[in-house]
Every structure is written in structure tokens, then in C-alpha cells.
Amino acid sequence: MAPSFTDENSLFNFVVRDGNGVKGMVDLGLSKVPEQYIQPPHERIVKLNASSSLNELTPIDLSKLDGVDHEQVANEIVNAAEVLGFFQVVNHGLPQELLESLKDAANKFFGQAPGKKAAYRKGVSPSPYVMYGTSFVPEKEKALEWKDYVSMVYSSDADALSHWPNECKEVALEYLKTSMHMVKKIVKILIEKLGVTLEDSKLDGLIGLKMVNMNYYPTCPNPELTVGVGRHSDMGTLTVLLQDGIGGLYVKVEEDMNAAGLRSLLSLELWLQHINIRIISNGRYKSAEHRVRTTSAQSRVSVPIFTIPNATEIIGPLPEVVARDGVARYRDMVFGDYMNNFFGNAHEGKKSLDYARIN
Image 1 (cartoon, rainbow, N blue to C red):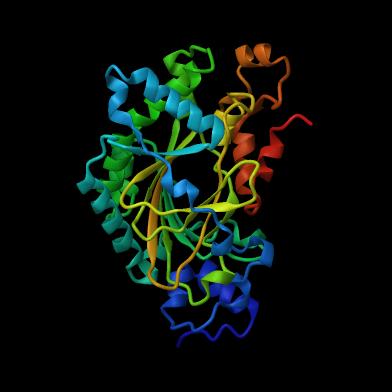
Image 2 (image 1 turned 60 degrees about the horizontal axis):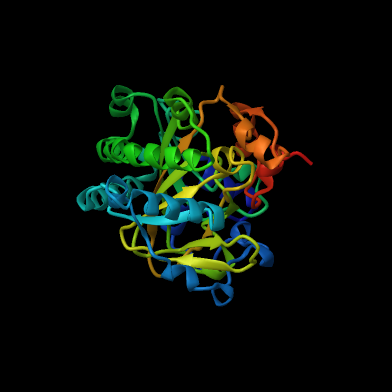
């Protein structure tokens, strides 16, 4: 018998602790959003207040990095990092068939019976490299996010093929490995344009931890009251994001309170994140605050790759940049400490950046 959610605990147990997720709740035939998912008015996404200007941004053609236009394209990447904190790319080297297969695999995983997915939830997953969950930090959130996810940490090809879910492991691993050449090239450009040359081992340390997430946003009866993901900037160095054609990603432009909805059709967007981009650049490069809107029309998926510093890496503004700027705006820190702070709190814009900021 389906639970009636007569109190807050029964819903929380069903969705979070038992691993049924938002999809399991929606599959019961909800006609309205439960109170636990209703966001306060200031956190809701009002489409009428969103600018559409960012939809007209020209994607960056990465294929030109290997030709006579290298410097021009490198400057386009840097300009996007300085002004917006994100950019969309084309001719990135990832086959269209791979991206289609990736979306199909995500839908296949989340289309399974709840018990199959719940086998990977925190505390019972057979592998420390795989975790299935819902929302972000549901135990600490005032209003839950309308999202289920599976997170797969990369340690080696063998571990991925042994432990990642069968429904998506092969295509997710190919997506990760195919993307890394692009990620390394872009990170190297961003560092070099700061006037700094880093050894390959240091560059590798900045993207040493790699994670593939598959996010699932079920249809929502009242999308105007909810968020798929709340306001935040990711914690890593560079994020590669695949959206499906439904869209729902909203970006806050710095110095502008309006959010812009970005709709992409099987495209890749690269998001520059603040620990290794904003902090290392001493604030020259921006970090994009973003969130996700839900929809009543159709469920949607997104598949980000998070490239993250090793937990033992010391992160801080590059000394050469501080010398040029005359002041350090962020402190040096062990990245593992920042990561624990990030995952220990609910999404709240760029508040996690305060952990690193020098007041």
C-alpha cells in the first residue's frame, strides 16, 4: 500500500531513507506538490523575471584551438571566464551518438524499480564509489529539491566497470574519458592566461578527482513552487554539463539579479567553478551561480562531470597573481576541508565561497 504522507516523517522516510526518491513519490500519482518541497518565494524561479539574452551567446568552437585561430579561441574562453563564469562549446570531440546514449542510459537507470536504485543509497551501497540519493543535503534543507541522482566517482577503469551501475557504467566511463582531453586543454589555457606556467603534475592535481553524476528531474505538478536544484556554484575546477533538449538550467549573471534560462539541444556547457578557477585566479575569473527549474510537461535528465582537486591539494590564489594584484582575496586551504564544508550545508548561492574568502 502506498504511504499517505500524513506527516512530515512519513514522506521523508519514503523518499529519502527508503530510497524511493522524488520519482517514486511522483509515480504514486501526486496532484500537488507536498509542503516539504515548496520553496520560499525568494527561492522560486519566476520565468517572467528571466532574461533571454544569454540564449543568444555564440558557442565557442573548440576545434579551432588546434589551428591558426588558437589565440582567438583561447581569448574567447578567458573572456567568458572573466565575464560570465560559463560558456557553451561546439565541435568538442564528443560524438553525438555518445551523448544520445548517455541520456538513454540515465533514463534507463532512473526508470528501474525503486529497490534497484535504492541498493546504492548512502550507507548500503556496495561500493564507496557509487551513491544514489535525492535532493542535496535533505537532512539540513528547509525545502527539499525536486531531484534524484546517482553519483559515480572515478578511481580506475577496472573499478568503474566493476562497481558502477550496469545500466550506465560503460557509456558514463566513455563520456568521462573522452571529455578529459578537453578539460585539461581548457584548464591549461586559463592558467597560462594568468601569466603562470604550472607543471603537469600540479595541473593534474587540480582535476585529480573525477565524478560523473546523472540527475533526474521528474515531472512536477506545481513547478512554479519548486526547484530542481537550488542556487549554488559547484565546488570543483571545471564542470562539463550535458543537458537534454528540455532545458531548465538558469544562470545568475554577476552584478545582475536576473536569471537567464538556457535551453540546449544535446549540447555541452562548461561551467567554471570557484575553488580552482575563481580562487586560484584571485577573483579574476568568475564562478557561475546556477539553479534548475522543474517542469510539468516532461521529466528531464542532465549529466555533469565534476573535475575536482585531490582532497590533499593545497588550494589558494597563485603567488604570481597575488604579487601582481597586491592583495590575496582568498586564503590557502586543504581542499578536503572545503569539500567537507560544501557537502555539509544546504545550497545557498555562493555562501560556500565565504569559507575561503579573506574578510
